[in-house]
Length: 233
Image (tube, rainbow, N blue to C red; front, side, top):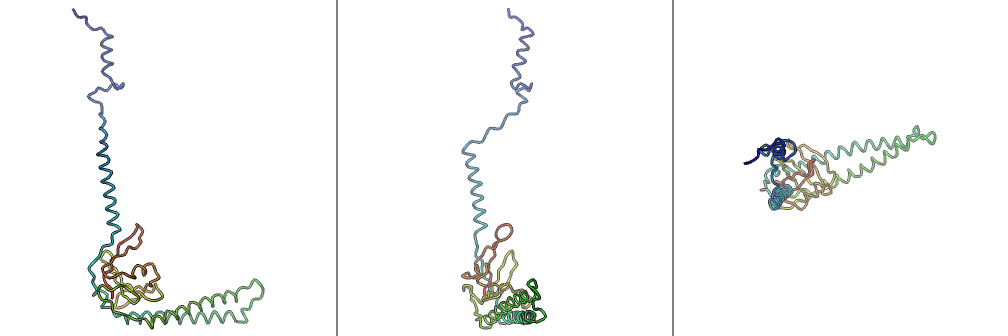
């Protein structure tokens, strides 16, 4: 005849049904998710690396585009050169007048130094020298544009000095003229803006040796932006 379990035995059984020590039954315990297998982890890692590699290649790849020479050929490059010369000659006239005034001030008897702390004449002399140097550079640039040949570039020709380049990004074209000097000039021709660059500038160096259909990467805040050369004339 079996003996009935006493109070202590029932207490023992109740304690044994609390394996986590906090009173939760096995039915209400949170079962942790099994860790992914090593092969699966490696496969996911390789997939992420492959995706990043494809994104980098896509960002840095420089696609070729179908040249569209008609965009730039409708502009008269002789008129463009005339506008460049007019702007440079205007700058030279203004600078020459300023240089003469500075030289006159430096040699004026009224501006002679009264003591060793009076620097008026010396400052005027430095200003005159700087303006004279800039005037010489402008004169040289004017001569370079006056003798500049303006060749016509056919489809497939390599960009060189004298080329009018159409650079496009996100459907927005920008016109550049590769000149021999005075890069940075901005002119309005036939209602369109043309920027002058030289082969010594960062952008000009990327132009030289390329042709319509090629692409170049220009730095932007987020890294680089791909621009397509759509026309050369």
